Length: 130
Image (tube, rainbow, N blue to C red; front, side, top):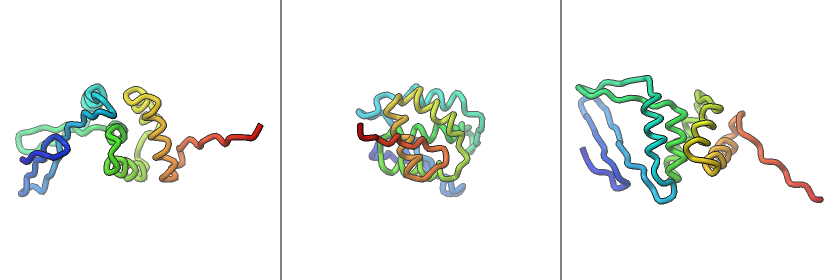
């Protein structure tokens, strides 16, 4: 176990080739994300067992919303990679994002979707001269 400079801990179990970061993602920009994290955990249905510990695996939709909430480039890149796999329920992701991150979260999500050329991206409206 080692402390992460960004806040949180890294746990590595070498003999099982398992490496997990537990990151504290309170930030001045995003504020307290505990409601988003709590919702993700309460709705997690998949459980992985590592030795005596059970870990809940959050949905891709929650994970992407968490990644977008941090406003970190590395996390946005992770969100893009997950979205490119095209296994995400975009409607559900939009709902989670709107509920926990508000309109600015939706703006970020739609920008990311457009940047990767996702088929479900909402296109920006063109301005017209009047």
